[in-house]
Amino acid sequence: MAPPKQSRLLALPYELLLSLPRHLHNLEDHASLASTCRQLHTLCAATTPSTLLALAAASSRTHFRPSPHLLVAAVARDLGDWARRAPAHAARLARTFAGGIEALWALCLDPTTGCGLTMQRVRELHVLRGAAIHPVTDLVDKCVGAQWYSTPHFWDGGVSDAYTLDSDPGVAVFHWAIYGGLFGGDVDALLAGAPERMLGADVRLEFVKYCVPDWACYDCQFDAAEVVQDDGSIDARRLVQSEVGPYVANANGGGGAEGHQVALQWLLRSRRWNTAVVKVLERAGLEGFGEWMELRADRWEDEVEEELRGRQALWESAVTMQGLEAVAMVACASETWKGPDRWVDADGNEVGDEYRGSGPGFALMQTYVEEEEKEEKEEKEGEEEKEEDEKKEVEKDEEKEEEKEEEKLEKEEETKEVEIQEPEEYQEEIIVHPTRVEREGAQIALMAPAQLEKLRALRAKIAALPEDWKSGLISVGRQATLEFPYLMGDLEICKSGYVGGS
Image (cartoon, rainbow, N blue to C red):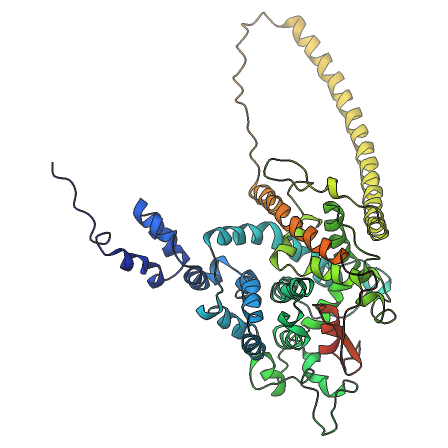
């Protein structure tokens, strides 16, 4: 029998075969092509990251929801690194922000920016979406969403920060993650002694204005204090354009942008949210350089000139400005976490104990963690006592039933004839397999050690700074932010002029 002829497809020159992925419709087609045969599987493994990103974009409304936020967050670090390479790149990024998240997504798809995905990253995103993003979205919902509003006696002391918010918890998570991915590299540049490579506050403010849209940002810009220049124009850093992007409807009197900035600021001030972040550091044994500032009510108003500009503020920025990896870390500390109780390395060894600290910052963070654990313990003990009482009642009823059953059996035993003993039925051993959520949780926990090592390296660099080190202050009108990424300060500037309750 003659050997089969080689497929006409595989007979094509290798250069043409390498171009095949660029002509596929979506990521599903890529997976199908890779599973066709060994040669095509090897060929698909060489698909360029930019091509994989384009294929993922075509599948974004199916496998990467919310679209385009998840994929933008996935490549935000690449885009930020590209923008830091040249002032022209940073200027182009700032101009792109005016078009909103869709324009930013279009820039990510431009091959010249170097943004892309690997198949390993695609698999990580699949795991992150189920095991990290969903639990953190639930946490955000309990901080500023529908679950927060459902707290009993909400307006009568049920929560300490009752307020009317127009929030979307699922999108707020990605606003935070994208900001961290884009601008987290500024912390690295600052610590590397290359502040000229930082994107800076001006670029950050453009992102917040247009990619975290808020009606207050647009409607209240003329009410912001001290932003009007001598010629009657508004400081460009506070000015909000409406020709393109998310504010077109606002300019036409049609409502338009939601209240994302106010909601995000409320989230960053939430005790529940910050306690989760503190748990991450406690678990990793990473202490700070003072009090955790976002857990202080007077954080911004009274201490801007001193504590807010010091090493602790830089440390908090380094921890939270890690993009989707920061979301994964917070997920490990959330109330709905289904993964391991401790982070482990690939060999199953727990990580963090050898780095555990005991300084003042760690002690304060530990206090908040202990308070929450104490409340949980008291609530659990109350439930256990109730369950114990119910269990005793059930046991009494069961004892009575058993006594009746025994009496009945004794009477039957006296009268019944001897019966043939049947062999016991074979009992098949039941193997309990971990659920999908538990498997994904374990995978997230395996990602954590690499991220923790990065944070430890950043902390060591911050510790090397002088104790009296202070960040530069960037003022816009009466509001201010810092030279390194500080989302709370950026939000203060972008919604300046807004009066709470209006």
